[in-house]
Image (cartoon, rainbow, N blue to C red; front, side):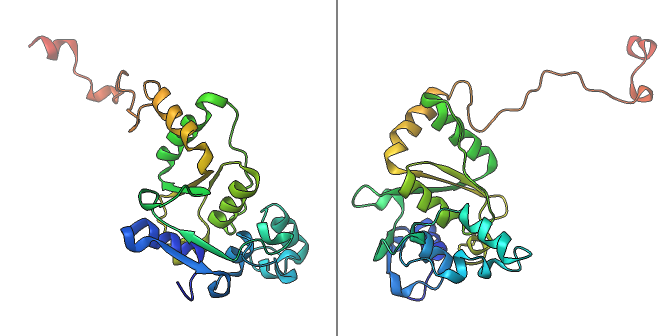
Length: 215
């Protein structure tokens, strides 16, 4: 693909089937955040020093602090020449990272499943910036999963809905996730069922009297 961004490539993978198997070289990226996050370029100083975050934050100091919490692969040096994104069902080889979009209820189910064997928690920074790209970088570089709120780019160019969140994990954890989903299905079935065994409360004047019931 040319003149693209990571979030647009993910959009293609989500909805275009085999046509959603897409790749892009570093020099065709149009989103500096995404290119730096995935190590397709060395993070430029105007991003790491906070300048490009102005407007999202009040000053460069706050921007630099925000950036430092994101964990981009390009912060040290350029690491990758290209990126390929595909529907999981059409991957010709094991991917590095898996990206899953879903509702908050589905994210809860995934979190329970992932933690079934190991316990623990998903502890990633939520910055509101380059959410899916930073999460991919984190999973690739540290082996840790992320649960995040899709950023503005994801919504503008990836057409992610207001009701969706994003779950990112290394492919090596997929077996753990699947086993956990199966192991916890009795305690946490999905869709989650409401509890119905309660007594409804009505205004006193709505209650039938004993005399009315006996007529």
